[in-house]
Length: 632
Image (cartoon, rainbow, N blue to C red):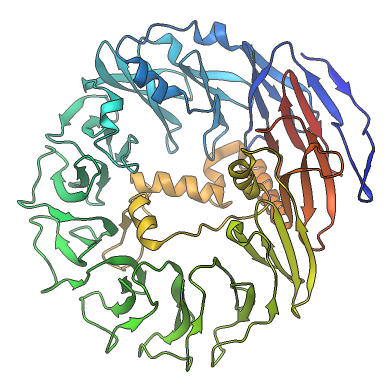
């Protein structure tokens, strides 16, 4: 166990409060390469030299460690992969990676993948024990299993590990390996190598090659005839919805349906489109929304259910609401029912330009509110009539941020240095209640509503406004170094929820495809626990403090730690240059009043650190030291 050096706070006078060095420093024998904190156990995991170590968040002492080189073995020849493949596969990866909503951390050591139970430091999986090189791994939540895919002797293999026992349940060859580098030119960014699980079958993708594997025995049932970009098992367990993109730039997307038993296409003609917008699985039919419109299609033969498609020509968004569908085509919106019939007499123009971003669109009470880059207004849900005499107009060249406080029925909108606040009962467009002068407006990524007022945040600027429109404070910082800006934008999310600002078309094209499962009897989303979709739901629910009971003995601690994450909403953490000393510092700022609660010295331009949400303790690595800063 490493020696802990207790260091007294160093007082450096600045603006009425102090910078400080670490409360405790854990000195290692070698340079610390990476750091992460498991969200459930709270254990801080570091990789230094040959060793992976676990640090207790309560005692700050090492609670377990192991020699990673001995565990994983030396670097071996990657016989199947080219040098280019190897660089693409490993160069951009972090050494340590948390597995969401689990007690596990994945580590990359000597091109080997190991999985660590952070509770006790036990290595529950080690690819070094096998001949294959892992290129993809996936935690299967329901059965506490670990699915790995790799390359061995020129073949792609899939293997399933039981994490309760550490036993390999099976290993299966999927087919010949090919250059991952060349594959990257065929598929878009949302091409997936993740497997989908449905019933007793695992549908495994490897850069377009789709295989069906028996989950219990590992038997290869079939391999797809062509390459696919994404696969969705349907709730009837009889079909697979598949998407593939063709061409160097993936200019077209094709959607088809396969027989899950044979992998053969059952539609004679695939749907050909520029991009897929939205999918729903209704058991015997699917709703497909794409560039040129949307319709229900029978799963058996691909025939259309509605006589004609809902209007398309630049379809951007589809929102299911109480059995109806609210959708946007170019710069207009319409509401239709489940039979494809219009519920409003005419389309409603919601922006000046068809490329304008949609910042908010949804039903609130008995109204629809839309906020785009150019307009805002409320519409009666039943009649489609605009409720405000004129649109709330925005400057499309300036950022627009918004937030809704459901408890108090209060919308908050920022655009062009003005703040607007209104509820769903307002009868006409609101006037701004505050005017502010944001110095770095294009970098704003968060707007938050509190009982005391509003906080606007960016990576280097935080501003607080009272409920009566008075600017309470405005803090502006300078990021250190030429490369600091992009890093600072990433760091800004540590203290607040970032809101992306981008064009709708770009967000549609780059978004990960998903398919919503609908119960055909009720028209509501299915909650079946046997579908692959629900493994994703479980992961998402875990991050939202729901479903913790499935995690067994650690569920209570899990809930406590995630509730504590709410504390971060009250603070901004800003990586900045201290103007008085020219040092690099992390500033902790309280959003309620703008007070700087802490200023921690960092010594490198790309710091790696973790903020414990439960204790607000900060862990920072520099060279051979793990520096620990307690909450002040």
